[in-house]
Length: 519
Image (tube, rainbow, N blue to C red):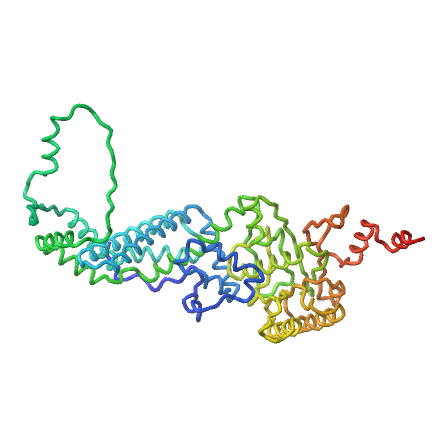
């Protein structure tokens, strides 16, 4: 078969086809919404143990189009196949070995030892690429991203540069392994020469003492401390061995010099990018085992109806599953012209958790990840903006309300018609009448900008502000209004009814109080 001179074209990233061209990906900062939505906790847990791959910038960069989201979702589906996950995991382990050998080579001082480590790194790299190519062909991926990786690996392996690299590396490793030399030690004199059939002195010693052996004895193993780097005696011996076999060692030096940067950049990028998919699926595994559902949402540029079924707060679910607790799932659905979810109900009833779940759902969908929930139909959001109350900061010399208003102004200026805004009991530092006025003004701005919005509030009046608002209420146990169910349902706000139920439960209705106060 004729050899190909070069692999055809660069390898596109499996993150998206234009990932390499996206400006400033590696310099991005953590989005401001991360702490409010607890996405910072989620990402920290996902990348734990994989810090060397620097995956956080990927989580900070939502995809710019529905097509890019679909591309990444397809790659995720491929990675869910055990055959693909296994072969990529094995490849990653080999590549970690390559990097470890190269790191040792850079740290060590003695040139011959550095060259041997570099040679072994090349050999491990060639085996990693070969193994990945064969396993990927057998796994038969279906996504465009991994199909391109498969084609690229096939071209790369059959290219003349790779075949020459692999063949020459194998020959040098064989030549070095075949070297046998003799060391004679006489006092402080050490003589190194080619092996000429001399008997092994260690074997002679064993043979001499064999006649004194009386019975089988239990063997004992001893571990000797050994530094990975050669000492000066070992260096001197190896230097003399290299003079005995000059052709092999000069070939080793030339080979390492020619291939100082041997890893293919596209394959190195694939090794890093694949960890994003493996890490996310690994994070979801114990939650799936606990019975929680995940899905690949249908994402459109502008959906007439959006919904999420059996969704949940991913950070809270991780904690509850670890503690053996129960995760409560919820649904939401909006139909045109509804664009604002107004979430009201009892305090500590799951309103903020419900809002966080919607925020997480949309943000993770914009990354192309499988998201919490049985089903999702979502609009693509370009940014997720959050307005959660902050502690008053003395150094700003401003009151809590003023700072809250300033943050809201900045958020509304940044927002586009594709943005998601999540408001969590905004302006609660003022009177009820002022809070109602400010929230109404903000929601009117939200409607003018056509934003998708979640508004968590204790102000029932906001739920019926316009036809664009949809009311969701955190539920309580009908038999015991003081008991929270953490279910949130789409229904008219009922704050007064809830208050009356609690008053009746504790005998605090107007009639009961009046009766008890009678003389």
